[in-house]
Image (cartoon, rainbow, N blue to C red; front, side, top):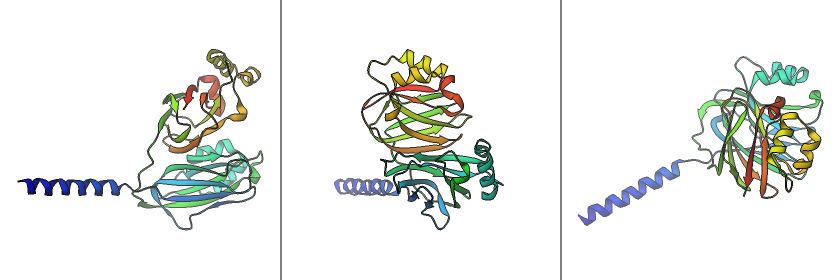
Length: 269
C-alpha cells in the first residue's frame, strides 16, 4: 500500500511539473527605432498569440510607436495614404494592439500584445507633427498559434467607455495589464500629484480643460505613458518602472476624454 501511494505521489508531481512547463513564455520581437528608421525584427510571418515586443530607442530620440493589425480588406498602401492625409481617419482602418512612447533617457520599453492570426500588421513611429515623415514598417502573422501565455500581471486596469476600472495601486516596477473593453480608443498617462494637491481641484481642472491650474497641481515633467493608444478588444501587458512612489492620477486625453471623466487617482508603491 505504501509503495502504491508513493508511486501515485511521484506520478502526481511529474504531471504537475509537465503542466508547469507547458506554459511557454511569449516570443520576443525587437523593434528598433531611430529618427529616420523603424525596423521590426521579423522576416517571416509571426505565429499568433502573446508576443513580447522590445522597443529600442537607438538614438536617444522621443519615439511614439504604435502597433496594429490592418482591418480585413485594407492594404498597407491604402493605410499609408490615409495616414499621411488624415491620421484620425486612419484609426478606423486598424486594430491598434499597443505600442510605446519613450523619452530620450529611455533606452527600451517592453510590451506584450496578443497578436491576431492571419493578419497584416504595421508598426508606426508617429513622433513629430508631420505625418509625411512618419516611418511605417509592415509585418504579418500566420494562422498558427505560438502556444505562449501572457506574463503574470501585478495590476489590472480596464478601460470601459469613459472610465478606468480596476487597480487602485500600481507597482513601481512591474507588469500592468490594460484592456480596452469600451467603444472608443484610449490611452493612459500617469501623472504624479504635487505636494498638497487636492483631488477635487484636479477634477475641476480636468473637466474644464484648465491647463494652468492643472500644471500647478500635477507634474507633467515626471509623467509616464503607462498604456499607449489601443482600440476596442486590445489587451497589453506593460513592463513599467515609475520614477518614484506616491500619488498619481491616470488620465486619457484622447479626443477630450479627460473632460468627460476619464481619470482615476492611484497610488504607486
